Image (cartoon, rainbow, N blue to C red; front, side, top):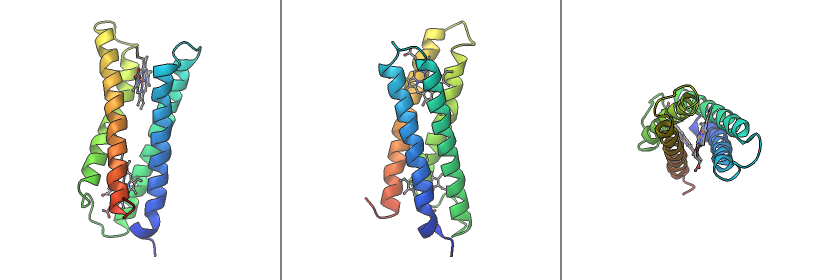
Length: 137
Ligand code: HEM
Ligand code: HEM
C-alpha cells in the first residue's frame, strides 16, 4: 500500500537534492564571482534546485493525500516548509528584478542576498523537522 511510510524517502531525497543545488548556487555567488559565467551558473543552480524542491512538494502533497488526507497536520514541519517555499518563490524574482529596476538596485541586491540566505536556512530547518517526523532525529 502507498503511504507516508513508503513515500517519504522520495519526498526527502528530492528536498535534499534541491537544498544541495541551492547551496552550491549560493556558494558560487559568494566565492566564485571572479570567474566568468558565475551568474549563469548561479541562476541555473537556483532554478534547477527550486524545481527539485517543487517536485518534493508535489510528492509531499500526494503522499499526504493518499494516506491520512489531512494536509498541514504535521506541525511545525508543514508550516515551516510552506514559509520556506514562499521565500523560494520570492528570491529568484528579486534576483531578476535587480537587472530590470534601475532605482534602488543596490538595496534590491542586498534584499535578494538576505532572502536567499533565509530561504536556505528555512529549507534546512524544515529538513531537520522532517527527519524528526520520520524518527531519524
Ligand atoms: C529529510 C527531509 C524531509 C523529510 C524526512 C520529510 C518528511 C515529511 C513527512 C513524513 C511528511 C508527511 C506528514 C504527514 O503525515 O502529514 C511531510 C509533509 C510535508 N513536507 Fe516534508 N520532509 C522533508 C523535507 C521537507 C522540506 C525541505 C520541505 C519544504 C521546503 C517539506 C515540505 C513538506 C510539506 C509542505 C508537507 C505537507 C504536505 C501536505 O500536508 O499536504 N518537507 N514531510
Ligand atoms: C532560488 C534561487 C536563488 C537563490 C536561493 C539565490 C541566493 C543568493 C544568495 C544567498 C546570494 C548571496 C551570496 C553571498 O554573497 O553570500 C546571491 C547573490 C546574487 N544573486 Fe542570487 N539566488 C537565486 C537566484 C538568482 C537569480 C535568478 C538571479 C538573477 C537573475 C540572481 C542574481 C544574483 C546576483 C547578481 C547576486 C550577487 C549579489 C552581490 O553580492 O552583489 N540570483 N543569491
